[in-house]
Length: 316
Image (spheres, one colour):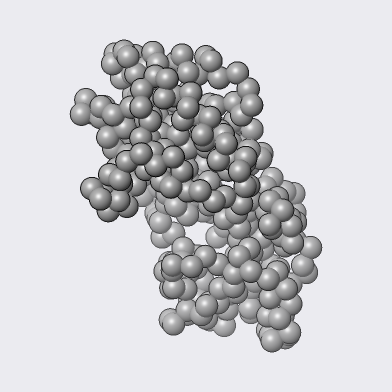
């Protein structure tokens, strides 16, 4: 997949976007890399295909020192399905920079989780980042948000049935309090997401007080957009993931309800029931800051670190 406007190629990325619509195109263009380095070229690689395409690219451009090869994963590379990518492609000498979920000490690596791409435009100024974080963190309580809890989940995950079993267990436990509306293919009992909200999940969730949003697997550092989408829609997240310590420098864990996989969740269920049945308690819980006080500074540092890493590639 090749950009029509810029010398940027994508390999093994997700479907549904052109090269010019992908977040990284906007990042390198809006940060002026083509103005600073007139001969710059970029080749981005991800996990949805043959890992050996990096070797093909290196053979096709053997002497082009201006061509920078960057790996990014929006997937957990520790799934069996991605075993070729388990080292975040740092085992391939042709990769100049690797971006992923893991906490890795390597000069060619930067932790850059996918929720950053989902929640912040690539051309965000520092003021825009602060505005987005403020909006996420402090939300207005709406008394019209009167539905109990939602789940939006498909039937197929790379983790197989284990993550579906956990979601099913969560729904069964919470159904004892009130009916959970399941709008995805898993346990579907409402068509509202499709027929009323035309697959706009954010708008659909604005009616609900709670949202079941676990990761497919709990691995240290593996945090996707799920919990952030819940917060952005104004729901209280019922979450499992990242060893139940997701992004501690960004997220206020006191504003999240953590489900223990294969553990005793009786206290969590009791808490949900109390919040559901007591509007005053729910309002107090809801109005907690959703993010840490310095969350915007953390996000800005992620952006600055990526810009510096790419600059360093050309300066070296």
